Image (cartoon, rainbow, N blue to C red; front, side):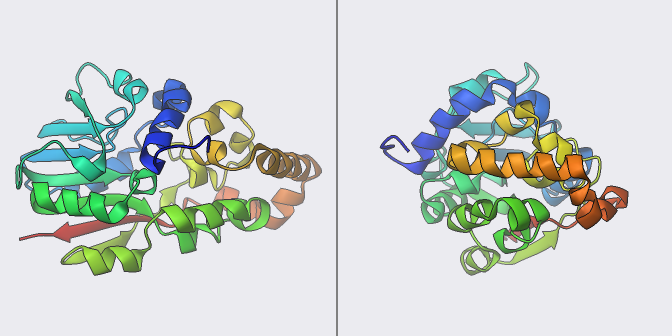
Amino acid sequence: MNNPSSRASWTASVYDRIGLNYSQVRRPDPRFEAAIWNALGSAKSVLNVGAGCGSYEPADREVTAVEPSPVMIAQRPESAAPAIQGAAEALPLRDKSVDATMCVFTMQHWDNVQQGLDEVLRVTCDRVVILTVDPDVMARMWLCNEYLPEIGEHDRHTFPSMEYLEARLPHLHIGTVPVPADCTDGFCIAFWNRPEAILDPRVRQASSIWHLLPAVVVEEALARLHRDLESGDWDRRFGQLRRQAALDVGLRLAVSELT
């Protein structure tokens, strides 16, 4: 990792490189957006931690965005809330200063998850909404199980488990979020029924896991996937997925009620 001072600082530097086309590939999926906005309830002020390009931020609330990468901040649309460059572990907000906090695909990048959650709880009055991944479920998806088990091994060390969240966030409800076949948010496992997309370097550019694993491991797995698609072996084993409308690949919406 080139001797990074922390996972958070190194991740910010990664997103400074891979974030250049992020907003084109990682377009908010309207079904995820509806679930997040519904979970935010009546909150009038919302903090978005690891805000990136502003995906999933509610347009009808007062939003405060915190994001470590200047490249990601630069891609935020003009209509988005201004972003503060900062990290989850040291949120630049007063105690109990926002009604709700949202964390979307971000905790795996925090340097210290417990410290980040403590900060989220410090600044939030009513509820915390987290869109994340259950690494144990994700590891069973064909990409992780058959081609790159290193993804599962990596993510078990970076994504907090559901048990961890339940132990540290009060009144937590965790719901399954099926990923639709036509998901517009191109995160790694969103292509469970579109394996050809994973071979597209532009798609991989916008997902951090492809930059975190050893290049030789990734190249060997992609070569095998390419061969299996050309030979029809992938479709013989997994082709039924192409006909499914949605699949549980481990995406979870965790909502903590603080009042």
